[in-house]
Image 1 (cartoon, rainbow, N blue to C red):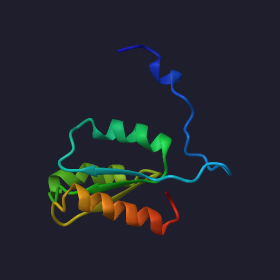
Image 2 (cartoon, rainbow, N blue to C red; image 1 turned 30 degrees about the vertical axis):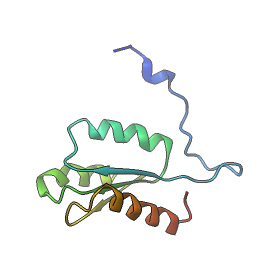
Image 3 (spheres, helix red, strand yellow; image 1 turned 180 degrees about the vertical axis):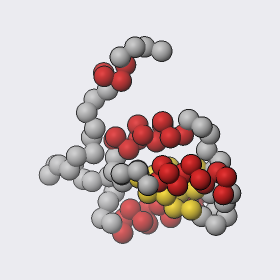
Length: 102
């Protein structure tokens, strides 16, 4: 690991701009691992909101996701069953478009 690598990252790109459309992010999960929260934090710095569509349909898997989904810039959608990657992506795209995002 490189010490100080995080300080070399560019500033977040999610600030509104008259020349850049507002863009939302999508992450589909299915029993995410313990490192998911750290990866999600990086994504949230680049786009806002980030929709996390969870296909796990398992209370033990969802408990940590609910904590992450309550963080600023992140929203959790819990599917009642594994809807599949395509359905989950389409679900998120519809939600972002309904908010006027790309």
